[in-house]
Length: 500
Ligand code: SF4
View 1 (cartoon, rainbow, N blue to C red):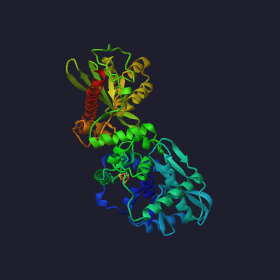
View 2: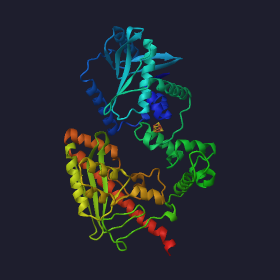
View 3: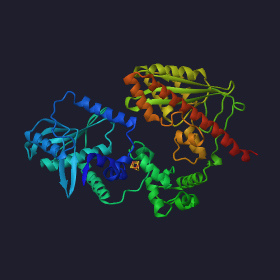
View 4: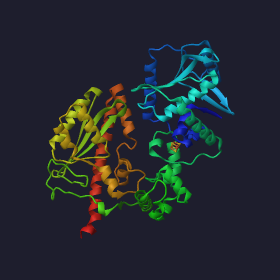
């Protein structure tokens, strides 16, 4: 068995992924999506920039011949060259071959099999934080290198794009690496593949996603039920609650005392299973009902809306931002203005055609939203509010322009999750709006794709990329409007018996 840093990294993210990478049918992998390719390119560019002013040696070897690569790298280390880029170091421990390819090997003073010098590995990462998985990876390189050179480097560093050099604590990381490595070898030594478990965060960028999702779908796997975490799934499995039906039939009080549950989660999970089983929306708790304020009964002022309100106003704004987190750049503010009096819907988009225009489009956005000084601003999740606060600080916008604005924001995700349970796999905008019958014009578009389109627009100046972003953003605003309209009518119908 051969374990390299990539398998170890993927094992830390998902044991099934490491298994499939080693033994799975490559034809069943998804082709890399545009966003993933962009990340790979960005990472390579980051390495290129870091190495641009340094001199280093490359081992010479035929492509894919790791033994030749390791032998060439060993030759360079014996010569005592200062830096080796893309070196390959191999060792075998108890029948398992460990293959390490650190971004850089840097010569240090010290005693090793080579003489009075040794090497330490360096990893160059695009990320901002020294993630644990990166530290484990670097420790893996250290361990393999120590076997080959007969000496442990005292330190080893990650080079992070924004933070610069980060020295890891080797003595803290070594036992953790050993634990992960042992578990990884055990998993990969067993004949059966680890069970599928769909978790949106980690699966969304995995090349086995379509393969795993199809299995989860056909098995009606509980991981597709919002609220079933890996830890809770273990508890449910131990009690033979492994189907949506069994969970829907369960008494929540039976689940309450289980580790990781409690009264709230137990009731929520059973209700979620019932909603999926019956394919219908459930009202959550009439004691905490939202106040459906309507302009005919509510005098709209600039005072804004309380957290218990779901307002309907003469003019409503539906707001969605497109941003590139790695550049901390907001490149689009999209606002759908819905005027119930004139029965019109007009979409406004403020696009930064280059990063320097962020401030300009911020001002244009402010002008539009202040044209309707009492209109509620609906958005989905807290990102829009956080961004408005951040941009206000960044561009020194007077607080008299920001604070009243913030009170007009209504987070529809919060209102939905507080008031209804829906038969969806996740409470993101897309699954909810789709269940309600809304369709995006480009069914494959998503936030990551929008980031890729924007990078392509900057690189090529091709307007079709900007058009794709605008269509996607407008549809997000319209989907938010669709969800809001449905929620108001659902709650009105649900509250009716209580009002009668
Ligand atoms: S799609 Fe998810 S469950 Fe499947 S291998 Fe990838 S990360 Fe693991």
